[in-house]
Length: 377
Image (spheres, one colour):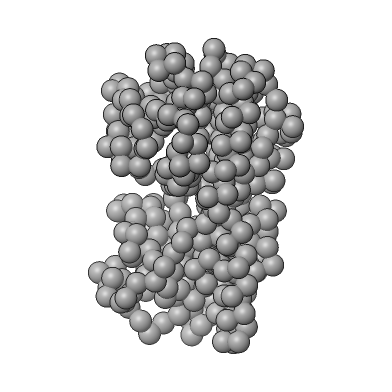
């Protein structure tokens, strides 16, 4: 069995969907020893893909990191490559793929429908509408759709018009975040030092992440109780910086950009609370990661975050600065007995989400879809 993995959009800097394929592809190769995996990527992602792809890597040199060339590659290059390598199946793991059914059966992983749920405004609205249409076409023409939560499955069926029986839910796994020997030494270069409660949040700066809502909540916390807030991600020229300055939070918020794996582990180790203010997600991987690391979580009160956080996270309306600030303050004030119970329960809950189990479930979808050929369902 030969599986072409469509990684044309992989750059190494696109967050959760790339974590997804990095975690799953090597495990799928181990789970399916009778299968050959061939990765198809663009010029900007080739070096990164070679570091984790278990088999041959084919590079489409004219596909770069821009969305236009990525979209063109999906239309032109994927089906051609599938025929060239005599693939039995194409897997598109990052929401987008070819727009027509083609000769080779295809599985697409659709992580969320954020472009449908958060349409944006102005020029961004037009861009998001085009992206939403591309996602819809990809999902409707695939033989099988995989997603990462029951909440996402319902949204995909509603917004993309995909029959619910064609959607298989395969939960993401959590990251195993171990401690480091001297966390404060690793964090000192970022301007983060001991002596103050620390609130951690992570993610890209897309509007639905609602980091401006988190900053509004932090500004509502009284000065004497206000934690040092670290929001990792966003790059060197973080678009959140003007909002931090406008709210007068320069002494209270650190924007370290993308941190190293060791620094991220150190942040989880010293954090007193993890905040997830995101308004919509397909899964909410940071919530699982934080619980697995033993950090109490405050999350926006939405169905998918309740699905992945269970009773071990605290929920509040992140569109209300007062409500979210109150939840943060309450979490910081937990006594040690309650905090330890939350740590133990959160770790046990997070352990339910396993990349190994996800690889097993996904391999079943692959075999079933390849056996059915171009029949959908």
